[in-house]
Amino acid sequence: MKIHVLERELYLPRSPGEIFPFFSRAENLDELTPPWLHFTIQTELPVELREGVLIDYRLRIRLMPVRWRSKITVWEPPHRFVDEQVRGPYRRWVHEHTFVEGDGGTLVRDRIEYAVVGGSIINRLLVKPDLDRIFSYRHAKLEEIFPQPAAK
Image (spheres, rainbow, N blue to C red):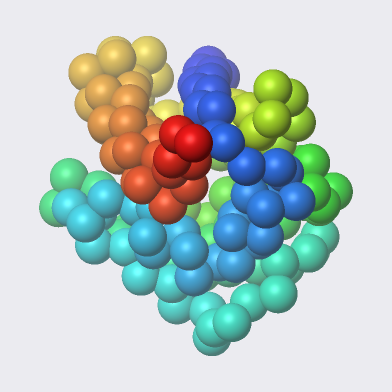
């Protein structure tokens, strides 16, 4: 099984103590997920995220309905958490979120290790372009939610 890695970084002008609480609320995933995925959380809200918590979602990937279950496997506020797919479209999905303080703000890092059915060709043609588009959307939304402070 070929493991692919996707890494993205985004600087936000707030401390990890301000950024992490936003990520710790599962319902905010809805705001960070592109509308074309038709994403809905199936688990009753609010969900208190902590190690061991399971969250169920429904979405559409290229118009195909998908059920997805994630488990929080690492929970280290306000610096890091990891969610892993328990059930879903990937053969493997491990998403590490880290929040590194510096330069008066936070460097938000996403590192995803994933494997797809169909291997490298399917990844190159379909999955990687979709993930790039999803994370571009996500970063734009985060920049709207946590804008640069106005110049004094």
